[in-house]
Image (cartoon, rainbow, N blue to C red; front, side, top):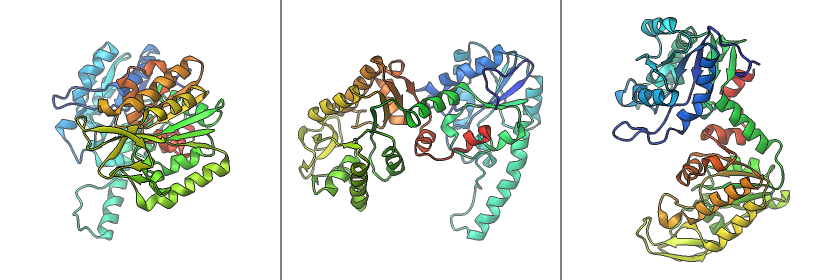
Length: 418
């Protein structure tokens, strides 16, 4: 398999799949450019090697061409990050794009338009009536799959080599993330983002230095069941926080007031606790909760036992005793995985638990532990507290990271590895 570090880019046009699906405000200003910054080293590596770069990315979930979701909105900021002009194609495929790619000189960068303006990128039919029959859906899907072949071929024809550097979409078998790799059997590789992600996740999941602690937050047990079950075969301690806590507490007979709860998952929660015990995993929940009488920063708050939340009140953060307990566990760990906050950290009244975890991870990392932060909200918390450079690795993966941790095959990774 080729690597970006050793490949000769001299005179080559590199098709680079990046993840520029960044958030914009109503003025089309980028509010978080983490993913764009992460792609810069790969782009600069190609340029430094004498090649040119053709960037491909999706942006949002358009149902067709949508000016609001055009990648032209990020062009100027990309130029600032790279310190050089970036040409904008205005389309993803077609004669005009083909001509622009052909004219690209060494050191130049061309940004293609949002790939998802084409249904062929995802391979899913659009415009079907709500009451479409199963046969109509089948025919429409087959039609898109057929035209997708041409779409992939047209994309591939733009470059000499293919680099996948979009870990956040590696779990999707889309045209630009997986199918295109077949056109570059000897000229495909990962960019620095994916290389870094795989190295970091493998260090945690395949060869962790112990003790290994994972902290899992989130509102529902149902959304994290696969990752929890896989982690029970890997970790020494699993800390569970966030809204899912109350499903476990209620399953044990506790009173959880108006907190988030999934009664239909009580048996599952009890199974998880049983399996953790059988495997010798230290499964830790917050025994103390910061409760509020409203989902608001202006709500009245109190602290109580997590099994005794009064009616009309809901748990929105962990209490100070649980903060201290979690902090002690994390600081004693040598490998740390954090996915999901343990409270509504976006509100100042309910951020103490999440901030405590972030602080403890930073302290442990400074003492030599390896820390991996993954999942949108965890990354948002790390960025909020300006700790991104104080932990070992901050993943840009989101859903791809979770599926990789679950042990699932990621099409975008397999397409390169073969």
